Image (tube, rainbow, N blue to C red; front, side, top):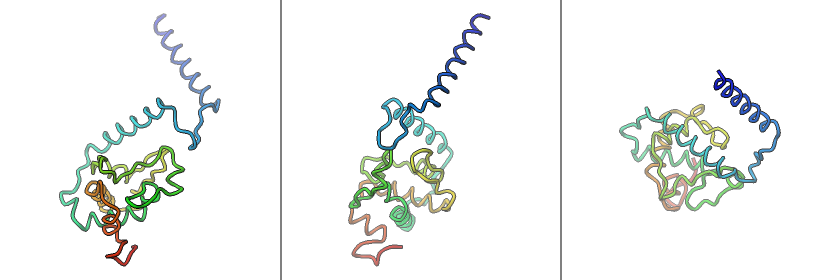
Length: 175
């Protein structure tokens, strides 16, 4: 009985301490100052494990990386993603520089863009990061096209990105 009371008391103290911390306003939520490294690790680890778990049952279409699908994904990326994630030859925007955590460089040659995970992230968004849920406005087909583009285009050169996304010397631009 004494052990149960001790456990209950510890739980109550933890809850009260947590509430005291929350209502104290001591934690700085400003996007001007990085999170404490421990908090940053916890948040990132929670994100990666959540996405891995939730995307497990997703299977990319067998024809995922058709040229038209990749081009469609590139155009969508140009119109909707570059503002935060940047692109080869496109400097970071003011919006991108003001986000914390910083949006990742999705076209980096070293980046792992697993299509099912990319699909889940683009469709559902990520809380408290500025990443919107495109599943409310885009078809699954379009979201898979983004996943195809990001998977196939890691390390893409600026000139190739411009050509693939529909802007550049070989294209009339935009669209």
